[in-house]
Image 1: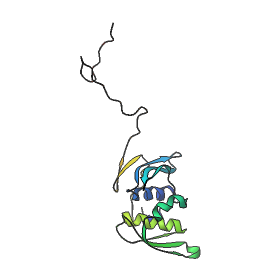
Image 2: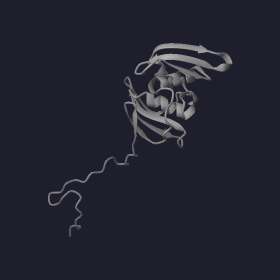
Image 3: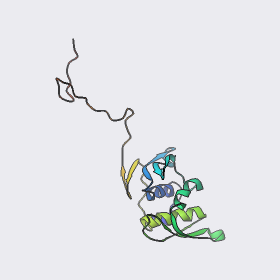
Image 4: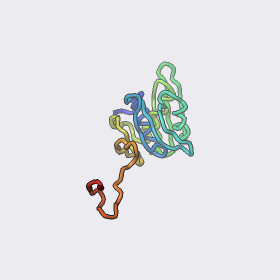
Length: 161
């Protein structure tokens, strides 16, 4: 998928994937229509919806990572953003209907290039730029067998009389 075509949930997802120094986990809410993240950005914890395509509050984490930023509004044609980012591999250009969308597309392109894979709507843990799907956690946490003095771990014995 071309970065220049990313919008909505797909754009939010790839911005989260590009923030691997901040985001530890990506998951989806609202029946898979909204990206949510868990992470810690410079001492500020974040656990919940992440919609930089719709909110400057969320997009500010991208803006704060800009080293060099050149933006131009082009009237009816939208906006162009050429930028370098902390952690990015190169200066990149992004175009969009708004300045925010152009900035986000430039950010993704600086980390992943001009194309990205399709959106993966599963809970994921991030390790660097790699994402690994993870299962849902059990309600009570991890359940372990406890050792008993007269039995092996996991042995089923009859009930005491």
